[in-house]
Length: 273
Image (cartoon, rainbow, N blue to C red; front, side):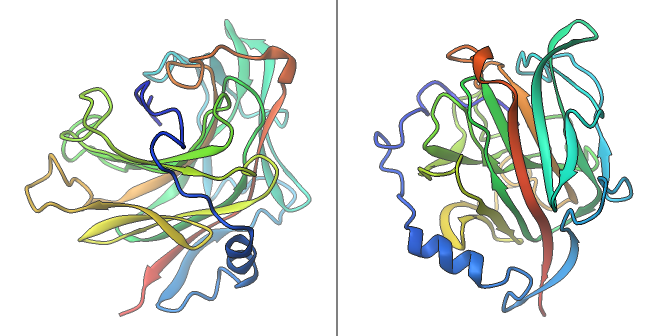
């Protein structure tokens, strides 16, 4: 989850897509475990009493994570817990280890090459919040970021509440070089309602979807790993950052804390032969 350039702010400016309520209802009603052409290979429905440590590992620490973020990632139930079948990731104004905020970051213990990856989530409310569902390579075959690639299944910044961002980063295409390939999609109720954020990834492309509707595509150019490093196993990440170069561009509204990111479930599918 890396910062996006200042130009990527307004959905209207870039002709973003307004998702209809009817489409959302249809996608949620269809039953995500029954997808034609796909077989479920891994999931977490968050139905247990606690976060499943066999499926997820907690990241603990601070340091800004390359973006000047302001949180200390912790494993306390104040920051990550299960409530009524939903994962809650909570950012709090709470000093720890010299950092002014605490939050949580979970990484899947498993990793996959290709498939369909879904998370049903409701996003936090508050200027300065920066939630994401994203993916990184398990091993740095091509070197450190951005060489190994990054898939942002969903990113959101609290100061621009009505839109969600979708990006794939590579050595050739990334925000530090001003060459990233992103889409900004209007999801006006992203902070009030759950939506299904997904990618379908194979040898030829990565398709980004919201509630079953494709909103962005990143295609394999066939020009080598600098443009397409996505032939390795990637793991899933769920986190809620505070501030940072992008999330904190308009400051942090302390009065709106604590912030909560809700994740109903995460599912991974393999394409049927």
